[in-house]
Image (cartoon, rainbow, N blue to C red; front, side):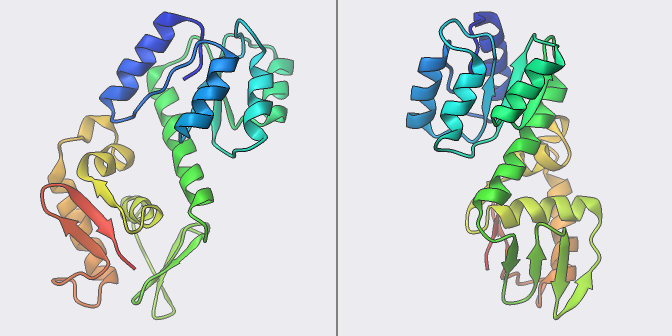
Length: 220
């Protein structure tokens, strides 16, 4: 989070930390480039009006070595400023004052796009079925499997994080939203549906694995 207004940095840090994000902060462009190089963030939220260099220069500096998603958060409303930031390599532009829900939605979308881009292949193949993350389709034994939007949302997150534990809270917040962070029974219902559609033995899943009390793991 790069902004020279302490109150905005503080508000964002509190809101993002409460939703499970780890937040690095910088108050000028020089510190931002240093923090990004050392911390390797998943997303950069950047103000254009910085005290030492213009935000567009920071974007150009980042783009020299990383494809990390960059969301510009700025009071500048002129279209020329927006075009300059996007041409420099920004992925999204949010105008101040902004709604926290809108910013969080854009942040989640940026993380999803980044995870697909960095995850290598857009097609994930298991021993039992294939997930095409780009086409948003699943095939089992060569036949396309119909999934509901919610089922796909869960499967997509798990497939993007294949091999890694995905916490219950993360799944609930990304698929249903922050208000559903404790509704773990939703996960049990929808994971059971996914297993019935995709697993050879739904009662003994090989690919959509439960880590009791913690979350779920996608295994190839």
